[in-house]
Length: 381
Image (cartoon, one colour):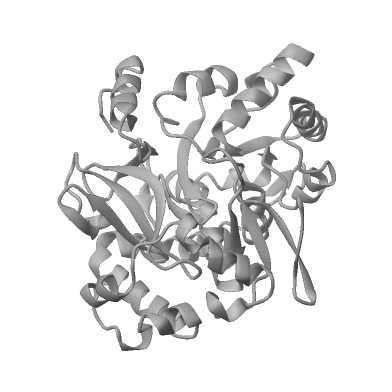
């Protein structure tokens, strides 16, 4: 596949420029994002109830819109799911993203709208930024080893309509692939055909599909969930006595889902996949909130897309106002969810770098410190 460098450069620049500008002036970027969100919230019952049309400042936004959680807003989501769209959404949903059930007994269901889905394409920024920094446009001549969860698991009936639901990692891959020149194998459609099971045998079928589709390909990118990438490497070694590094000269891995990708998991990833560049993506079922932009082992927020606050010991403040070493629980405002507490604990470094160190639990800082010690990282970028 021949890549036109001029076209590729323009495409990369168009995708990255808004992000880079927002990192240079997060205060301005966040004010613009809030203005846009409030304009859309004012079209919903929830937004009208909280006076979205009359809010001009961050202080007013905090005064009139309460911090919420999935448990708080679930009754509204349940009603949206049966067709009362305008309660929470100003656009008709086009699908639903679900969690893998790792943080509770049941999967969370989050509606996706056209505007929301467009923002999820930012998952490709980590890879694009790597290409822009290295000039490695030959990455696009290869394929992306797709190890993601299914993007379609089932359907939800909303009034007269029936919409698909699936896992966010698969949804990201399906839609990001449409906006980047690199092909994903297996295709997300092929993965979806295997069903949405989470058992070992279900994953073995997906791993076998990935191995068969990619064994003779030029795999330049591996994207997805970090533990899944490690399990895939173990699977092909157990069954075919090779590691990914024996098959491919992968250039970059863009991975998410767990803390410590660049520290705790780095040695195992390098042992299995070789000397690849590792770039962390920070996202959740609710959205894609940041990604690693360089070799510093932390990610930088998408200030141009989402409004990001944190709850700290000294109160609620903007994410970009955190001081190095400060911790706080992330509160995001998305096109679907106003002032939504994700449940993840953020650690600030020198701006604009952050790490998610785990869930908001009292022992999370202790776990983080212990893992930093074991990985000999000791809090360094």
